[in-house]
Length: 147
Image 1 (tube, rainbow, N blue to C red):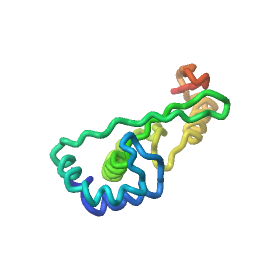
Image 2 (cartoon, rainbow, N blue to C red):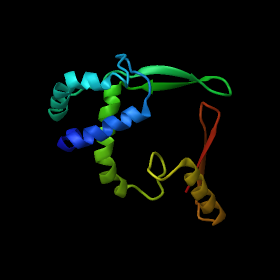
Image 3 (cartoon, one colour):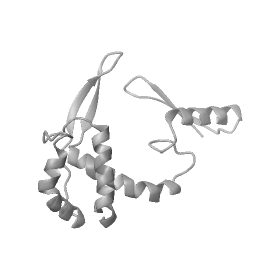
Image 4 (cartoon, rainbow, N blue to C red):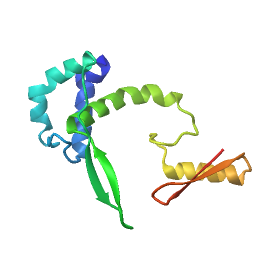
């Protein structure tokens, strides 16, 4: 956790949160207000993180209209929790990324859903799949996994 709360890592995380913008969480704190908030509260938050006592805030629910109708419910973390998540990500991603399967595409740097589809197509065209699963999700989008 010391690497997570290290000053340089936190500065990089702060800049990333500012760049990403986003709306306030349940506490109403905006990205624009984060700097002033941290000046007052960072020492106690840092100490809580180092002692394993930090508790993230509740997530604010936001309904986003879909183009074809209906809504998608998003969970919006507080800006402070996004900062901490980003700081954790910056430390853990370089450590964990090399351990992931080359066939894993979800939330990976340099990999996309389109890359996963292309790889699945290559397996099918090459006769290298042994089975597939077709799942209908509640959003009525079919999802297929092939191995």
